[in-house]
Amino acid sequence: MYVYQDLGFRVTEKRDLNALKEIHNDQDVWENLFNIDFVDDNSQDAWWNSLHRKRDDLRYVICLKDNPEQVVGRLRIQSINQQHNNCEVGLDLHRDYRGKGFGSKSYEMLLKFLFEEYNMNMVYLKVADFNPRAKEVYKKVGFKETGRYPKFFFRKNKYWDYIIMSITREEYLA
Ligand SMILES: CC(C)(COP(=O)(O)OP(=O)(O)OC[C@H]1O[C@@H](n2cnc3c(N)ncnc32)[C@H](O)[C@@H]1OP(=O)(O)O)[C@@H](O)C(=O)NCCC(=O)NCCS
Image (cartoon, rainbow, N blue to C red; front, side):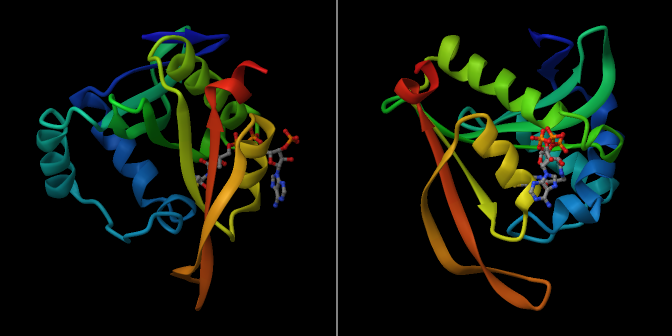
């Protein structure tokens, strides 16, 4: 487990699958995903079995330092490029933990891990233009908008820009 203040993240275990399914099927979560794939037990099992074959796509559980069994959210580190030292990230919190600062703290934890332990040089993410809360969190922890796919994302009966935000090691250390 990697610990940061009162939070941590750890490997995903089979016993987490129900909590992760609940997070995935929450409308505030799936509406931010590019593909709408509601998850049932079968698809969750298939995802679980495929997880261990991927070396460039890591999925962790965000938990409380003093109660690691408690699933606070899910975290992904994907498209990991070990030659150029960059990766894409994303995370979603269980609804009970939103709006309490855990999102910003989780990103601080993730960036500390990626820059100070995992030797990344640049970290990026994508966010739909209809998610002001997420954009606020990303700006707060140091991400900057570095591009956008215009009208890329269809939700709520219209097309939205998909915003690319990134942070370099230099910016993180400054
Ligand atoms: C997005 C998410 C990770 C943010 O985490 P969180 O713990 O809820 O956010 P925090 O409490 O750390 O911070 C939210 C910040 O956004 C601000 N905020 C909330 N709603 C806002 C809005 N509509 N417009 C602008 N800012 C807003 C808050 O004031 C707060 O800023 P502050 O700390 O300066 O007051 C979490 O809400 C979540 O998992 N949501 C559901 C799924 C999702 O949107 N995932 C991201 C996909 S890209």
